[in-house]
Length: 189
Image 1 (cartoon, rainbow, N blue to C red):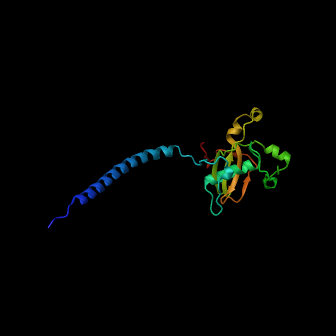
Image 2 (tube, rainbow, N blue to C red):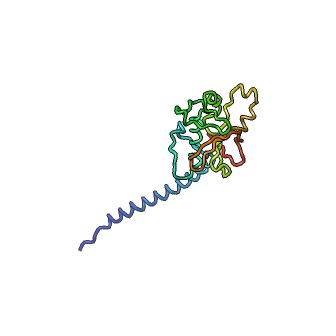
Image 3 (cartoon, rainbow, N blue to C red):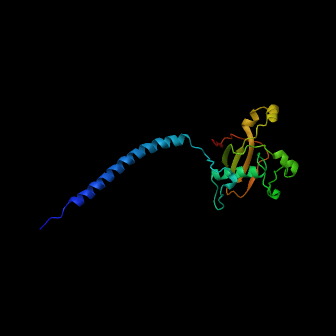
């Protein structure tokens, strides 16, 4: 009686051992690379990443608390649509949000708002006091204003947009707000 050949079994076994050995070797190298990449990534973490050219294109959730990135996009869209940047405001004037002290939604008020804030948020914080995210915007440094007030106020103070935790209410604060408040996280771009 002829014995069955062990060659196919040995070939399969050799193949499996090779695959395991290569996998273990790759896994150990990946760990080293991952540790290095992780430490590099940690040193360059940005609290909020902007991948949308137009923040108003960012899909906002409606059934949960907003993350910081989502609140920042919503605040950036708010200041664009409400005429605070160099971009035109929303076409439907009935959707423009009045300021808390002065309305500023008539033609003269919209001229006063125009191009007063940078388009991208500078910093943000999670605020229980305001019951939402507070997103800070730097004022535009127009030469005539810098000549009048100096550069210091532009480095320390800005305007804050408050986005409630669920993103249902958005409003701009009337008074200047510190750009680098105690709990603020600066957005590195």
